[in-house]
Length: 262
Image (cartoon, rainbow, N blue to C red):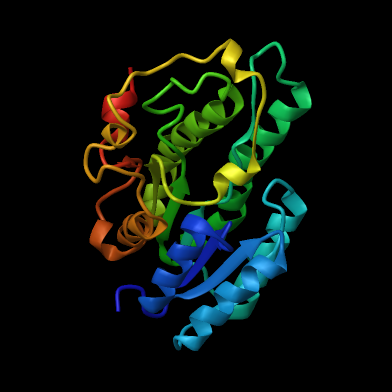
């Protein structure tokens, strides 16, 4: 199998893209640490992997807190004595609101989870990845990288653009150690991330993009993608099939951002 003998850490692994990626990497032979804040989300994923004959563990941590992330990485390495793959997936949409109404603490929370959380995840994993080489995959978005029509999403889009810059900065730094880092930018995907979005008074600033139908927004499949489709790209980036690829963003959106980017 593609990832036999390797250890992977997946943040936000209890649902959506993280869950699908954890399950697929385990199917391909990796031992997978599924990280999140709520055990009730993590345990079912671990159980599904183990029932299929794989190995997995649940790790509780808040990615925005340095001490918790250091402890989490140490826990994974203590269990399996190595770390080869990191999928920095956890994130929130946060509050979407006109700039005058977006509170500083709302901005800071989104940045802390999405951007600082990515930094902390990669920071504490890096010493272990350098021992044998490995792969880091960062989950960004088409928002803030190709499209800017979601007015009010300034904190979210800024955090996602920051993740792309972070990835590109680290690629040459980590390359001499055999560590690759790439970033995926999904479009509309059928996940529950919208459940953690608070939208306020967006009608005041909304800019309409006209499409003849809802399906026309998605040129390849006429609708949003699935978490499993994104997970297959994550698997590619985690595996040796992408061993000459680093510092690169990949848009996983079925062409959505090519139509909606202006």
